[in-house]
Image (cartoon, rainbow, N blue to C red):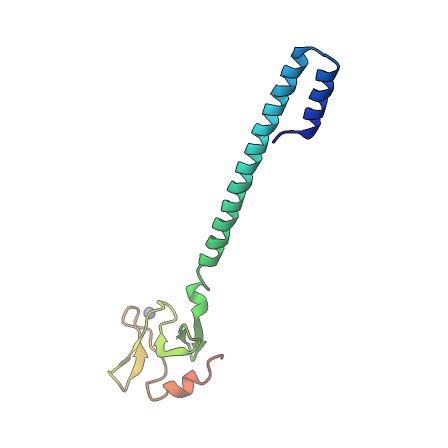
Length: 134
Ligand SMILES: [Zn+2]
């Protein structure tokens, strides 16, 4: 490799019997050019690797924030599952924890941490969930 133009200049110098000093300078310039070429190749390779890493990181970015996985109905939150449907358990709007009926099976859904209570029971659940956004 090297600059073709330098080879041409060198040929002219040799033909016209110019000083060896000039040839030496020419050789130095040529060496420097080769070094720079290698450096450019190295930087291009690094740049390509960084692009790839960036792409991978962008693909790994987490999905929507937890808050966006919930939709509200009758004051309770419902969690979207991976398939886009809702899990049939109301969540506490304050704690984002799943609730359970109190008294068991028949009572209103209640949060065991903050004592929040829904105004509906398991029997109302299908009707409440029918109002959730699709
Ligand atoms: Zn709560």
